Image 1 (tube, rainbow, N blue to C red):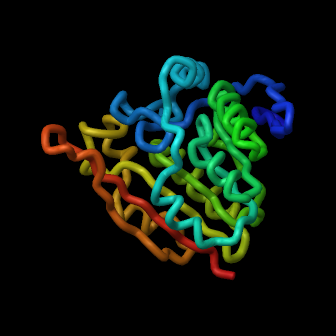
Image 2: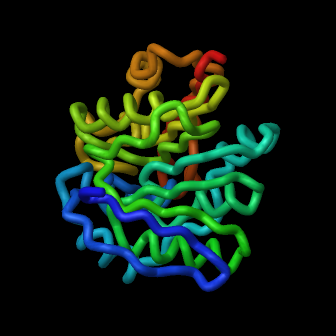
Length: 237
């Protein structure tokens, strides 16, 4: 498959993979990836840049608490984490019984995700691919996760459309990212790439939005926090 490499973890954790010529994925600090360092490639960088960052920096290992709260009542099924990085959310889903596919442009990030999954005894499937063009299997997933991916508008439209199309009837979509009010504090230094409630509300016309809220994090009094916005939506059965 062009520009995509699939790997399945096992008891012996297969690290074999090819090379992707895809571009990056806009990762950031509070999902998987360092927003306070400028918010990532946004589809303009190279996988090698993210390979270096994942190799040199420490990334969160705990899953997004919003995702945990929303997903915990659901019966496990098939899940796909688009822009998974080192597997913060995908590995937790696998330990909770989900059949998980993690997709990312960074081979190093996916290696780390497989290592985490193997240590947790929770196999995952990984796909090395460019999210700006990747098309997951349509109608195949009970859960789609898009956490802290801050693309430019055209690339974001593709990602969001692909995420919605991947949902099976009755499947749920979780999207979270930095609100535009966090400009200069968290996320990329480009307001076009940040989120608003209106942007998320209008991006998924085929889905039913169940929750759409802004959250605050990181305000310690001494240091200004940041604003996130998340969407939880379902494809009608």
